[in-house]
Structures are given as structure tokens and as C-alpha cells.
Image (cartoon, rainbow, N blue to C red; front, side):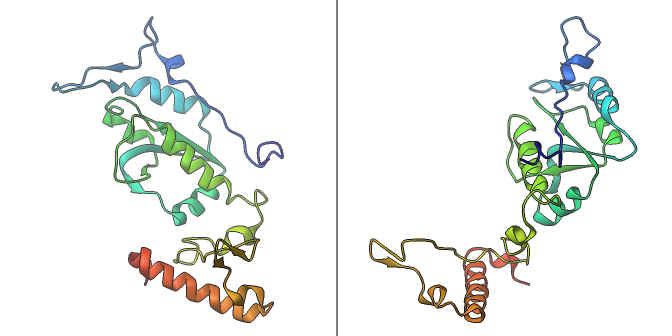
Length: 197
């Protein structure tokens, strides 16, 4: 929907098309030895330069990057043009750091390539762009107020002996708001005490 309404556009750039070798090779063995292959810096920089403009911000997907959080999603949503670089193999020649604005990690683990992190970041950022979803849809979500989201319920009011909390059926909006805030605090203390300031 965001694409159809021209709120965002996506382009996928094939780094292999910037190879200067006959077989479109973009990786080679690491200097100093070691396992795996390393992506060459030149075709990656050429790929960046093919789409970069004055409004571009360029980030490398890397387990060594700053951890992606909701606050970062908000910052990236303000960017006019975002370029996400997806490494593969043993990564990209370290000289790539001279051509990017930073690196981002989605967690303390290693994936085969940067494509999945780029998709995660794209989704988290896109939903924060004005007009993509209603602002009230994400204002109370997890991490927006430094807390986890409150629990939500829908019909039927009783299922298999489990009931919706009575306050949510009361129609008293003040009590509902108090209940939800208390549940946010309780849930956050129990599941993510590190978020409590």
C-alpha cells in the first residue's frame, strides 16, 4: 500500500553488475589467509555511487554495527534516501567503511548475508513514515514509550474458560487507560526489566 501510494519506493541493486571481471565475480580470498571469501570494495562502492545523491544516507548491515532499536527506526524514517548495503560471505573489504555513514546490526548473531537485516530495517522504518499507517497505531506500541505494549483482546469475551479483563468491557476510558499503563509496566518489569528507567 505504501508503495502503491508512492509514500516509498524500493530499488534492488545487483552488485555483480558492477564487477569488472568477465565472470561478474565480486569476491576474492582474504589477504593474510583465512576461511571464506571477502566481497571486493570496488564493485560495492560503484553500486553505491550509481544511486547515491546529496540526500542519501548509506548504512552497512553488519554484526559489528550499532544495534537497531526503535529510536534508530525513527531517525532513519526521517531520511529522504536510504541505502542499505548487504554483505555476504565473510563480509566486505573493511575499506567500505570509508564510503558509508555507519553500520547497523539487528542482533548479536550472524546471518549468511545482510538481506534479511535490510528487510527488517526497511519494514520497521517504512511503517513510521507519515501516511503509511495511522500514527495512533504505533504511538503505544512496544518501545515507543520505553515500555512493552499492553496486552490486547478481542471477541469472544470468554474463550475456553479464559476471560477478557472486565475493565476492558466497562466502557470507562479512564480506567482502561490506567489498566493498560499498569499492564505495560508489569509486562516490562517481568519480561524486559532492562527497559525500565
